[in-house]
Structure formats: structure tokens, C-alpha cells
Figure 1: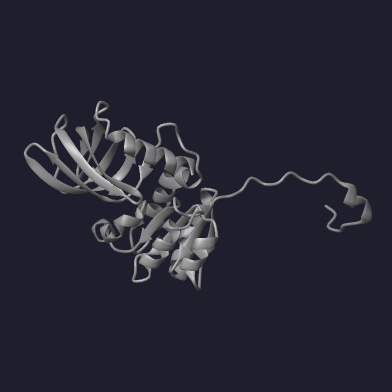
Figure 2: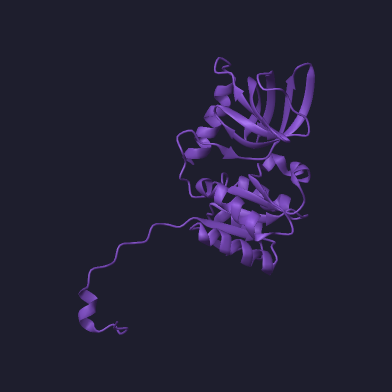
Length: 236
């Protein structure tokens, strides 16, 4: 193939532009972590960008579809900058380090998923594949959004605390050391980012060890606020 650019080639048709590629910002990660995660995202067709220096300022101005950051003393400023940015307010946020319970201190920022630290390639790849659709905005009609926030659940004469795993307009899945029997009527209370606290009735629809799912009551009009929030999240 000719590598030169002689005059006649100027008249050649201009190739079509490539489809825009989703980008993930890496903030505060070690070189080994960046290398491992960059490979995982690359296999899913997602570019990664190491954001050094003033990360909050860059996240205010530059568009990213996702952000992976270490949950350290600087995490609050980074997530606050992203969520208050018109470009990145709904980007997918991944936390690195700690555990799900520790991540709850950041629940107001709506962390979507957690990478276990130290990173292990197989589990990291599994998480990236599970959330790829959300990052690339290839949403399904009945979208389920992975998001971590505190959930209070009342049912069967008990009140328990849980962490959300995924949420949709029709229900949610949660992780908790306690659970309810399938078919138990419950009341769910949660708040996410810009969404004021929502309380909605539901029923436990499935159970697994340390997790269970709740289907919202279609006759409870309070769920419409949650539905509008999800639709807005998807559209933006």
C-alpha cells in the first residue's frame, strides 16, 4: 500500500467518520489498575482516559460516559464535580476500593458499581461487560440501571436496611443480610441523587443468598416519580 500523499490523491473521496466511542475517565488509579481496567473497557469498545491534575475541574468541562475513581479523601470532590456538570451529571460512576457498605457514604452521588480491590481481571471484566450497555447508552426499552444507594424496606412487621443493586421503573434488586419470603408485601423508601425520597409499595418477587428483588405495585402512583427519573436518566 502506498504511504505517500501525491497530488492526485487529494481528489479521493473522504472516508466516512467513525462512530463516536464512549470514554471512561480514570481518576486516582495506580498504573497497574489503569492498565488492567483499560484492557477490560477496550474489549467492550470503550476508550479510557487517565485524568491527572485537577480532575474535578476537568470533569466539569469535558464529556465522559463513565468515571472510575478510587474511593479516597478526594473522591467527594470528583463525584460532586461530575454530578453537577451538565455534561457528566448522568455518567456511570465506578468506585474502586473498600466494600459496598463503605461505599454507602457516597450514596448521594449515585455510585453505579464497585470494583473489588485489589483488582482481579476476571471479576473486573465481568463487571465491565455487565455495565457496558449503560456506558454506551444502548438502553433497552425496560432499562435496569445499576446504582448503589441506601434502601429502607418495611414488611412482615420488620424494617431492614439494604443496598440497591439495580433499579427500573418496575422494581429493584437489593443486597442485604436480611430478607423476606417471596410474596411478602413491603414498602420501599429510597432517594437517588436529584430524586427526592420516594416511598412505594411492592412485593418480594425473588430471593437469592444475600439478595432479593421487589416488584413495584402498579397501582401505587408514587412510583411514577421514580419512572420519570429513570426516563430522564436514559434520555440524557
